[in-house]
Amino acid sequence: MQIEVKSPGLFTTVQDLGREGFGPMGVSASGAGDPIALRLGNRLVGNADGTAGLEMTLLGGTFSFPHGAVVALTGSDFAAALDGVRVELWASVRISPGQTLSLGHTRSGARCYLCVHGGLAVEPFLGSASTHILSGLGGFEGRALRKADMLNVGPKTESFRKRKLAQWGREALAPRKLLRVTSGPQADCFRESSRQLFYKGQYRVAEESNRMGLRLEGSPIPANSGGEMITEGVSLGAIQVPEGGLPIILFVEQQTTGGYPKIANVISADLPSVGQLRPRDEIRFELVGWETARRLLQEQQQLLATKELVLG
Image 1 (tube, rainbow, N blue to C red):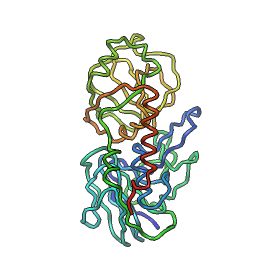
Image 2: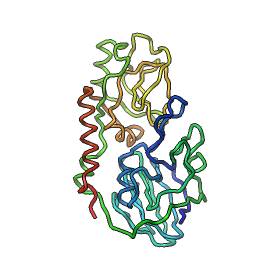
Image 3: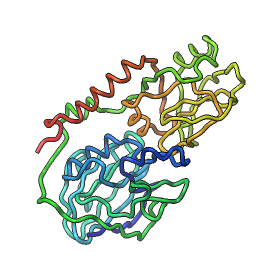
Image 4: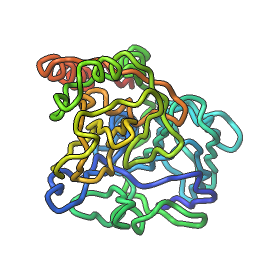
């Protein structure tokens, strides 16, 4: 089976759950910006959680299915329609041969995921199907989709089953605008007044944000070191403060080393929320301890493992 790209949207790439462990080689994990949405979309169509799907950003594409398919749309609402009929979000949908799925501008967050039964069949790079834009590797020819691209779909493994995400699950896993963070490795590089300014302030996501990092606009945070330090490894979700004092949240295609002090780090449980932030969204930060961060991640994973989360 195949999917024909009639229109690619603003920025649509093939993504799975990323490639861990290649930071020492200078290759960031990449993967879905909102991995929870991708995981659940795959469950709705009967795939393994890490199966490759399409990640659309801010504006969705238009896709034709010559042989039909079973799909699910998750994440943000992009006003999807199948041959002009509105498509339900967070539910499996059967597409007949020749039908066209169209998505528009986002009505909520930044990213929408299209998962298809069988998954997208692309050549893996370092064990992952995720597109790594910076290196031009992985995904579909190492790039964002273009008009007339033809995507191969893996083999069918089961008959169509109507599945949907339980409403309580949607509510419990909804993206947050108050991001919980742990103290960063260079938090002591900032005076107490600077740290208070960071945690009490409100920030707006800048237009220049992308999968490498989210630039923030708001009150500058002065660092004792003047915003520079010896280069060291950086982690996903690190919040670094370059010269000028405006924080940057390092995201799924972040550089693997950096020479700016890191005041905080977004906890793992809230990283999917970062993936749904749009330019001009306003956010705040809440400091939590390591034990709290670990507990919140465990609770999130336990919720995702609940059988009643997906109905049908």
